[in-house]
Length: 219
Image 1 (cartoon, helix red, strand yellow):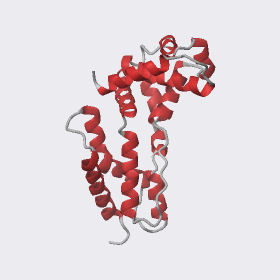
Image 2: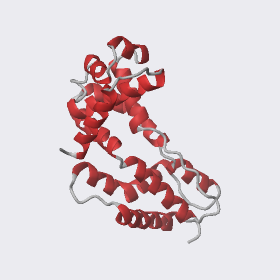
Image 3: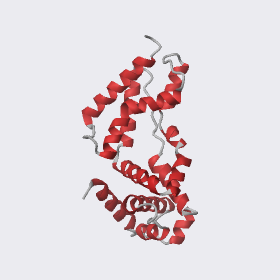
Image 4: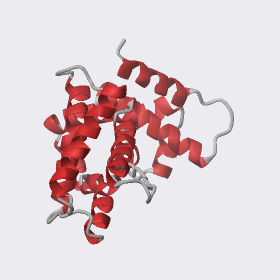
């Protein structure tokens, strides 16, 4: 059994274990767990409100108390589980390369976890064959930039004169590609062994230093 399948089975067991009394937060969490499990295991079309209710151990009526439609449920799942904000508070006395490296390592830790990778794989598959999911992702894609702290950090150091960048949004995309694009692709496609541990740290450090060398105001 693959790690993603094991994760789905474990999540399904958690969401279907409905002993005891649940409050609204727990109910909502279990519904999202069930939706995530159904999406990664069976795909968007097969993940009906009936099947999600069954997996979560709740009635379909309860699902509709939290989410007005299947589309609304999966929009919430994508926003909260895939595009969830990643907060980062740098130590202002640290040099720029250390601040940026720690930020990208934090993003890597959050982005390369099993649930996010499983959701991302499923959504990539679904967007190629399901117009409904493709439209959901298109509508929500702008949130992915807000979820990451990269643009905010770059803008701050452009304003302070530390960095020379004409287009912060484009520079943020470039930085992501230089540091996390390759490792993310390796995890998603298995085209090469994924970088982990010290290998990932060194790769991110190299990308960060290359990026800062190109954009530093002190050349």
